[in-house]
Image (tube, rainbow, N blue to C red; front, side, top):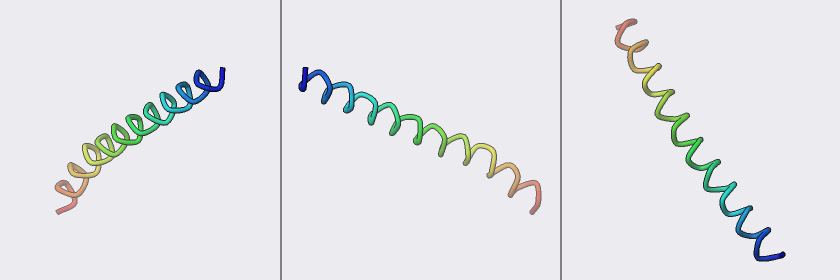
Length: 39
C-alpha cells in the first residue's frame, strides 16, 4: 500500500512537471507573437 502511494505521488509529480512544461511552451507561443507585434 505504501509502495502504491509512492508510485501515485511520483506519477502525479511527473504529470505536474509535464503540465508545467507545456504551460511554459504555450506561454512562449503566445508571448513571442505579442512581442513581435509590439516591435
